[in-house]
Image (cartoon, rainbow, N blue to C red; front, side):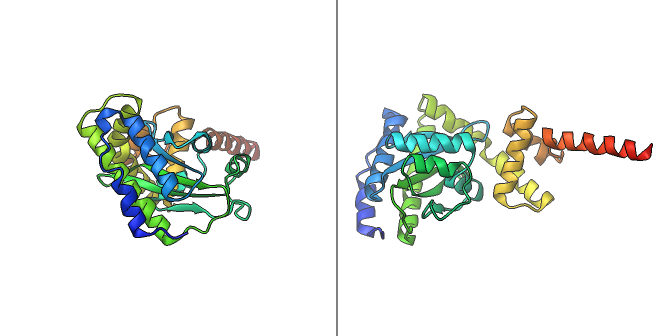
Length: 254
């Protein structure tokens, strides 16, 4: 469903007077509500990374959006995760015909959401979250819709930047501050892992996050070690496999 440039301009124009100093949460709520209306979507949401480098929902137009984004946070699956790790738009056009979304498929079906579109929110050259819209029917996302959602993501980035400058307080502001502090470090570590292990961006990010979880350390701390030249800590499964192989070698030797 193409987005008319005039409609996009009018929609963004209605948000031109938003002031995050009056409260970041209600400001972002207005953005997600406006995005839902512009895209004729059934729900819209915003996710931001926390200090652990994990996407967490920050704002949602309604309960459906919050449930879907909560599930992406819990499962680390879905278009939000892809858009964030690859710094590119990610779409589901018809969940019934796209079987590669793992457990997240059942989440969408239970919420009667059949299509989704996510784009990265970038601030000062780093990705700090995603802006997302959801539809209750199959939808072949038009290039103008992707471009329009990217324009909205740029508006979100401007509002978040203003919030940081104004030192806005609250949970969302603290989450935003953590995202800013760690985004460059995580991006650098992801690049190191991509080059070292010849992985794509999403797989490299999953390797970093898996190593952090397995070693019960913060993602930022693991990323700092990787950028300093240290290898990724082996996860529990790798360690168990290594011990089994060593035992087998000893049995063979005797």
